[in-house]
Structure formats: C-alpha cells, structure tokens
Image 1 (spheres, helix red, strand yellow):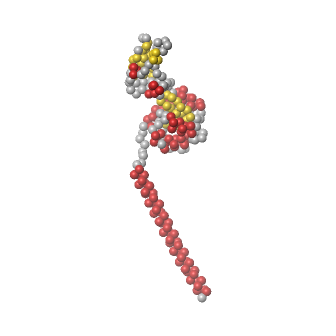
Image 2 (cartoon, one colour):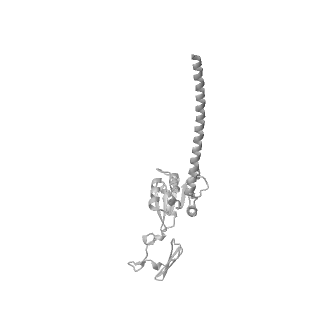
Image 3 (cartoon, helix red, strand yellow):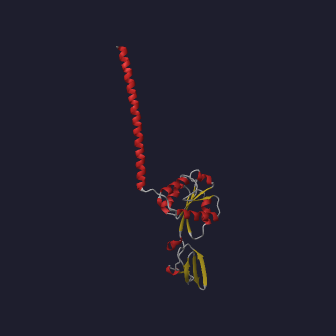
Length: 236
C-alpha cells in the first residue's frame, strides 16, 4: 500500500491503484514512517500536507500589500498545498506579522498606508534575524524604489506590478539566492577605532577654535589698552 517519497514526489498505491503527487521535500523518506488511519470506506487516510503532522511541507509566505487583488493574485499563483499565505494590508500589520509568524519569504509593497514599505524595509535591514528572510519588493514603478534605494538591489528581488506567475516564481528564486549572501559587518573593535578617531578629530577642531578665540581676545585687550591710554592723555 505505501510505497515511498522521493524528492518532490509522493507515491502511494491502494488496491492496485498508484497515486502520485507533488510536495516540498529535500531528502527521500518512506511514507511508512508516518501515522495513517482507516476511513469509513476502508481506504487509508494520510495526514494533510498542511497539518502539524506534516509541517515539513509548509512554508509561510507573508504578503504585505494594501491591495486585496494583489494579495489574492499572489495566493492564486503559488502551487497548491505547499504554501501558507499570510496577509497584511499595511506596514504596521506587516512588521507585527514578521515578528509573530517568522515567515520563510516576504513580499513587500513599496507604497503602504500607516507605515511605508520603505520603512518596513529599513526595519528588516536593521535586524539580523530578519535579514536572512528572502525579500521580494513590489511596486507599480521601478522608479519609486530607485528614488530611495540605489541599484543594483543586492539583498532583495524586485518585481513590477502587475506580474505573471513566471515572473513571480523567478523573483522568489532570486530573493532566496540573495538572502544567502553574506553581509559585510564591521567588528566592535573597528567600530571602536572609528569612534575614537572621530572623537580625536572633534577635540582637535575645538582646540583650534579656542586658539583663534584667544588671539581675538588678545587683540581686543590691546585695542582697549590703547583707547584707555588715549583717554587718560586727553584728561591730563
């Protein structure tokens, strides 16, 4: 009855009939390892690919967009049964969902109410735990992004709305590849040296200003002494 599961395929036989289907798995495994039950008709009942018993096939995709049409479009374009789509209609909801749901992929519209997509992007970039999440930025015009973020987009993928399924899948693949890139991070010692250098520069600048002020004060004193001497001479 139970055959086996190869990478990306499920193979089941029941009463001489072979059933095959697709799933997301990285390694071959045997279906006999999972619990099954028998239905009313006597046929085996297998755990759902979306249930907690089979969470290996569930991937969370967070779609942050104020357009219900775009959110539904993304949901409809993804393969059935392999993804759990979480929706957020503004930037605040999006940030809350990232923290609570810990998605495997984020699709972020650039123009959002309450908190803009650019602000959400900045929040993602400021948190190392969020930086590793593949990110796809969406917008109706590429120029909306390039006004704020310089190309090339090194750590996220961009897709222009409206888009087709092929473009969506391509953007997701690109985002996953970019998320694996190592990010340059300065060490604490380098940061300390930089901070010390800046402080030394500020002190030198202040000393120069003080020296200039002292010269000006000395000049004023000399002029004042000359004026007093002149007044005394006139009064004598």
